[in-house]
View (cartoon, rainbow, N blue to C red):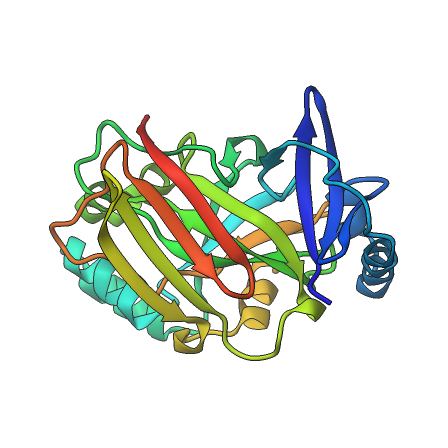
Length: 279
């Protein structure tokens, strides 16, 4: 049975609900509550709700699938990502070192309130001239650092700012509307074992101006390894979301523009769609 966990809003009220092919069932509590529990207990809660999922959708607006969770991100986990960083930067050896080293690049991406969901607008910085989306699989991690589920993520990035100086990475990566997640969380036990394919499409005036695909099979690091590094010397009582890097990078010369629409899709995880605005 296909199961997904959705964050929804009607008016001023928000709620979490489980969706299956048979319908919807509203959950008591929050994602933070689930991620504070042992994984087997959280799984039992989700599966019990799935058996009762026969009702109508209990909310209108789709919200990003998080509540109290910080979003972190891993960089240079794909060869194409390493090459992309070298294309934009005069500091290529730094990215060779990160790609080959045991310790990964992990950085803070977004506070929960800065994250946008499916259908909402992502941003590109007005002080940047070269901006791209980064289509990624996001790990939804519980308080113990275990993989509770997966979602799709867009780690919007200014290639011009990071390329000018790697120390500018926080400004290239962390700003309002720089992170999109969604459309939902698919529990880890509901995803078929093996690599997860991910596709990226950028539409301009209704026409595709960039398309690309990748697969987590191309990652130089595993999900469990990245999660373990994030939880070294850091605690997340409400869980966390960890973006795992991108293997789809548009060629030099391509930049996202306000008015574009970004689609990130995976057969296992759904489709995340966001229009682009200038920030």
